[in-house]
Length: 505
Image 1 (spheres, one colour):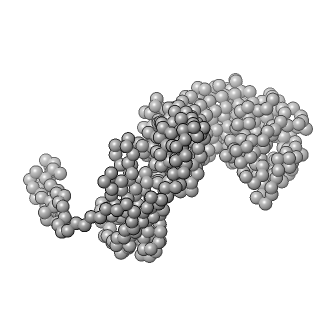
Image 2 (image 1 turned 180 degrees about the vertical axis):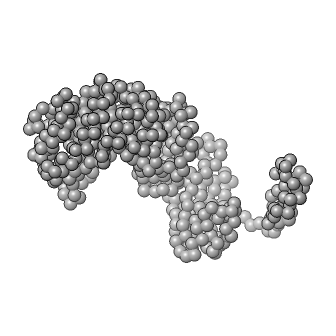
Image 3 (image 1 turned 45 degrees about the vertical axis):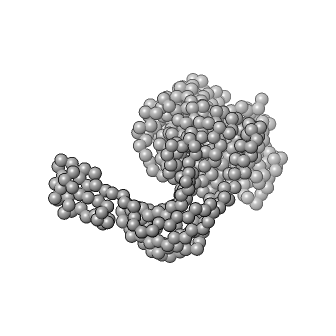
């Protein structure tokens, strides 16, 4: 550390006090020198593979001070605890470092987790007993006799062992869903791809749900090792920042289908610089942006190639001013808007700020209506009254290639009912004609031009992964609807979009 030319050394020595041992530093005319000397006294080492270690520790809250108890192996594998008292006096951190051969630096935060104190006093300034207990099957961290974190090897070992031991089975895997209710960055979502590098040659779809994901360099490297990966679904996922999302997208040059549903960021990051990376983005054709606590500035990055856009009205509002102005969708042919609230602001913002001259189909998914209540005219009028803004927006926009506008009523029911496919179809056939008529009256101009379609969707059974979608003919509310049953759908929204993209003949 050296002094700048404007620094007065004597003033610096009077106002700057070092608290370390006298032989660990030396101020001089050239600056301040710091020395890391080996501590005096006997050092005891012990080699063992599996064990339980205890340490009692308290620390003062001083900014910038980190205290750690580290267990380290000759290959630099490490298990530790850290007291980050400078920024979090009420929490402590557990870490694992196990670098793979291709990694050139530690994967900070990949296997890390912040822990609370289960008992009072809940601060690092009090004396606590920390325990690390590990064996080949799991690592357990405890404080004051209470377990606070367990990292298990068998969570991913069974799957990775099967994949690595049988190339035939690995070649058959096309879809992987990682579902884990955890906000820890050491979650399976952050670690499993690292263990499967170059192991899944035909993996096409990766879905991560209810998890925090650390997008490290190693994580991106693992994603690039899946040559067939074209679809990524992130649902209720937390990322460090928008920069992490940008790194993830640039690591997937073959990405075709991207769904972002309730994606959150720990920090906002510098969104304004994202446009610098537009040329590095994958050519995503199918983009779904459902909900988020933040605006998602991915539309400007991906708009040039998107052919099918699924977006909620809430995300349209959140992105209207920051990301829609002057945006041109050169290849957009299908727009699906999920609207459980009033349509006017979101739809008008999209068509007034962005251009999509090649748009052919527009689908609006209505608010959820109870399966038993659609027979009430007042409810139907409430549902379709707000659809008038959709008609106004469409008519004001010069969409010369527009072929259809579909209004979908999404159905639900109480959990104590267990409707079978035939029962749901019967109820919809009996009660939807009135809804079809009300919709056509509300959107009369679109109906007269032959652009309006009316559909209904409903989950079937208790598994919540089967959906029935019914589409009524353009003329005659009493006409027999076409319908299909979709299995294994993650949400009614997916069922509706998949069905309406290719309706049955």
